[in-house]
Structures are given as structure tokens and as C-alpha cells.
Image 1: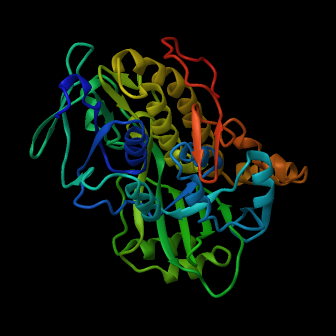
Image 2 (image 1 turned 45 degrees about the vertical axis):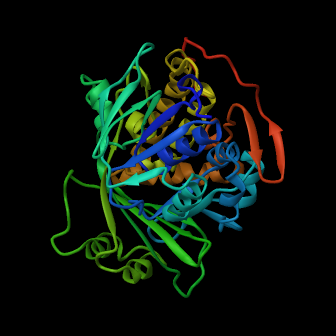
Length: 419
């Protein structure tokens, strides 16, 4: 017997097949939603070489039973820390200190590996590539939302706008908002085979520039760089040559990693962040998450982590469907204060890391050295309130089921303090 329309599963359309959109799709699917993911690109091959998942995002993924799969890819063992371009250590920390403080490791992995883990948790046919999505109607308590796709219109009880930093859906529902603004610097990212010499994970701060080098589980290295530069710039020859000009005289293994890159294999992107908060992270039946809602500088490595948190909290609040419009204000109440606090902290860290004056850099380095002498836990304090976050709802981690908090009734008043 066919199911009556009143008993059909709730329907969600997710615009964007990145980490946040796919996590939302998995979480909603596990709560009984019928989910369609519309991805503009022709494939799910992710833009971006690597991603770091801190314990907060891992705990969010525990909700959908995927946290242990991510932790299996952890490669950071032993020491790490912050250096200057000559190779001198400014501060040291360790993977053990991070585990003790935040309850888990930092996991660096290929974005493609994370995308594979997420898509494997979805039914076949959930993701449609080459399918740009446009919001035709945000819906309300009396009518569904409507999304336009290449093969026609889709009605939805919920639309998840996970369409990135240039989100067209954000512009549709909040047309007066200025959107993200240029942060004043650009970034480069690359994954290369590990050089012969061994090294510990590190980030290096120079004058108006920084570099990061991190080993991955498969024997490759994820490296990233940033430098203060006008927006829209590109190298006249290629970006590997540009990295050699800027970082070729920095400490080992930086030059070797640059030379190991293919000339066309270096990704370059200007950095933008959401300096002015959105009025809300929802409108009608539309919920925004990730860069579409709160683009942030990468200096804390939290952009993807916060998108994963968004996805899990959104699924928690909308539950198995029902009165979605009434439930979405609780999502904004949970996420807007927290994510904008992280945006502001990342902005402050960016200013510190990319100082330009010689005197200011010398003072910064001396302060970092002095603070680090108090112990590795001191260096990690900057992630208090971020990496120790715990998701709402029941956690379905491999090997154990535990309850972190009962499902709450939707709130209509936002929190005023970050959690």
C-alpha cells in the first residue's frame, strides 16, 4: 500500500556538496529525512588540499557514527609547535597535551578522504553533481520552500544553504547584507610526498607571512602559506615559483616541500571573513551553515570544524521534521553567537600572525617564547571554549553509545555568550 502524503518523510534540499553540506545530509538522513544534495561542480573532488579536524568536530561526527573513522587517520604523534623563519622554536606543544586538554587529537587529513567518508554514509543517488541550485521561495509555516535545479523545481520542508563563501542563497534571503570582506592576505595550499628528512608538525610566523607543514597518515605532507598582499593577485609565472620567491630561504623543510610541488599543483585563494554578522542563520525554511553563514579566517583551522558543528546542531533542532519554521530560531540561537566569537578570535590571531613591523614581530616572538615556558598547556589555551565543545543529543560513536544531553525544545531567544 502506498504511503499517504501526510506520512511521507520530511524532505530536505542541501545546496552545496562540501564538508558542511554533506555532514548535514548525513545527519538529516539518519533522522529520517529524504535528502537531495545539489552540487554545482561536476564532481565532488574538493577544492582545497587538506583539512584539520579538531576534537570539537570529531565529537560532532561521533553523533553520526563517523568520528572514529576520522580519528583512525590521525598522524600527529609527539611534538609540534611554532617557529620563526630561521627555524628557532617560539613555542612547543605535543599531541599528548592536546589530547589531555581537549579529549582527543588534532587530525589532519585530505579533504577528499573526508568527503569519501561522508558520501559513503549516504544512499546512492543522494548527491547530484553539475546541479547548481537557486532559491525560488524560502517558504514559511504554510508552504514549502522551492529550489530550482537544472532538471526542474524541488519542494522542500527544509533547505540547507551550504553553498560557500559566495553563497547565492545568502544573498537571496539577506539581500542587504554586505557579505564577507577581504581579510588582507592570500593563502597557498599543497599536498606533496614527504621529504626524506623527518620533521615535526609546525607553523612558522614571519613578517606579513606564515607557513605550516603537517604530515598526513598516507606519507604525504599538507603545507599551507599565507602572505599579506592585495586582493586578486596571481603570479606571472606559476604559484610554486611565487612560493619559492617568498619562502625559499625559510628553514627546512620549507624549500624542499615547495620544490616537491608540481608547478600547477599549488592552490591560491584570497581570504575573506564575515566581519558583520548576519541577522540570523535562518529565514523561512532556509538554514545557512558553514562559510555561507560565517566565513572566517583560517588562522584557527576552524572553518570546516564549525561547518560540521552547524550541520549536527541543525539536525538536532529540526529533529524528524514537524514544525521546521518554529524550530529554526533555536539553530540560530545556538550557532550565531558561538561561530561569530570564533570569527573574531580567528581575525585577532590573523593580525598577530601576520604582523609586519620588525619591532612588532620581535615583541610578538618574545611574548610567545615567554608564555611557552609555562608549559605546553598554556599554548593550547587559545582553543579553550572551541576545541572542547560538545554537541547536543545522543552520540552514536563506534563501540559505544553515550548521551551528552537530552534533546532540547527549540529556543526563541539567542544565547549571548559563546560556548
